[in-house]
Image 1 (cartoon, rainbow, N blue to C red):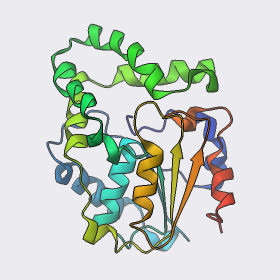
Image 2: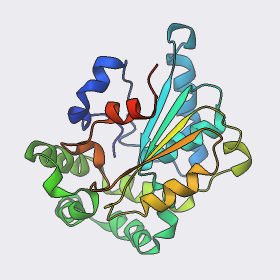
Image 3: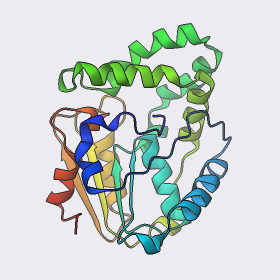
Image 4: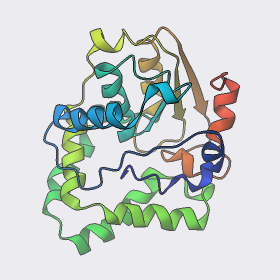
Length: 231
């Protein structure tokens, strides 16, 4: 949600096997995808020297998966492998969610903080995550300004893939989708995205909710091993 990586506590194996970098853009107010992606692209090219790393993995979840897809369009040769998790690229097919753009932009912070409780059952399968992770997720949701949330909903509603560019991405892509995602049609979207890539794999999580990486039984590294995504 905020790009800080604070919610990756359940995925400790990642930190033992990778040098993990998170793109933190908590207070971003970009009015379009170009404004959002261009500085991230420049940051990656400046901070990540490909000569120092055998492989560079790009992983994006939900809104982050949309960012990943746009980066794949813009700098396709930069990444060696990509992981997309419950991609929010299907957001525009949930027209009722667009009401949130208008509502959140008008909310004072105290009202918005209370409204995050309503969102909880859509974001997570509560029985699958530990109490500490529930608290961390709630704190993360409440740390993001309502105008930022409203802006991201606008961006998601505008999101479209450049099919000509995205189909040119030739590296392996692992697409993960939760079957019990109450927020987005993630399984359907995973199957749609798969057709655009020459090397793609789809992993369905039959008992997971939208924020699957918070769940006690989900280990991203194990899923990556399953599809020979580590070498």
